[in-house]
Length: 307
Image 1 (spheres, helix red, strand yellow):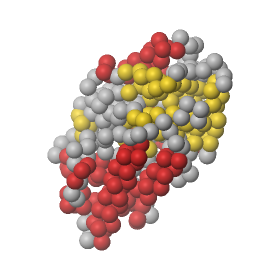
Image 2: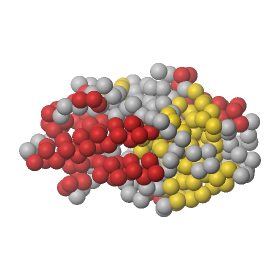
Image 3: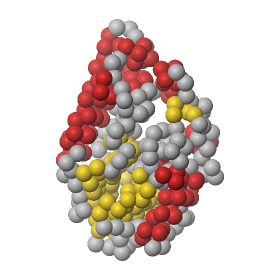
């Protein structure tokens, strides 16, 4: 699905979600929060084309001057490569671990051939946060309070940040939640992901903007969290059994019955998640090239993307 399918949806008055179908690899959600003190953006997009469409939609909706702040929920390029298209006056904010990871990210300089069609970032350059947080930071735009919070441990990545509006009960989760798509913890932790579910539930959100997939409400939240829990436990159990039986992550993935999760898009992320759990158990970093190579083997070809 092309970038023209994306829509800026008003979640509550002055709070917007930029939802990009079909939410697969490199196709993220973002957001905007309007206020009398200036607009706050939540993430950008992977490509220059998609980011320009997002920024134009926000400008049309808010009638605002250039955004005063922008928050990156984590370092991955689908949420950050468009940073360089922001005005120079925009203050960019992220977790300190996210900033360090984006500085070292090689994919902005050329995407490796694991995806099809191969993403074309367009004229983007590396732009990292000016301001960083370790645990939490609060922004105020007029009377509107916006809280940035880190869970305190790796989940999707070491530097995840959620954006919480306590008065409006709106939670932007970044990639701590994938609604209807396969979650990924290849730079995080299955145990951390499990632990994060109670934390996410504790906000009491009435409106949830996930990192990928449709926006949803309080009535759906328990079911979404329960699905994530079952998936995370499947990954952890598959990794433990695979290591016990001397299987490689790819062999363990081939043996795994995905069951209810087989129909989720991007199911090959199971392989990357298993690579991460094996690496954590061995006390080493994940070899992402090896993990992506195995994921394309499991997938019988390159990974799908709409970019």
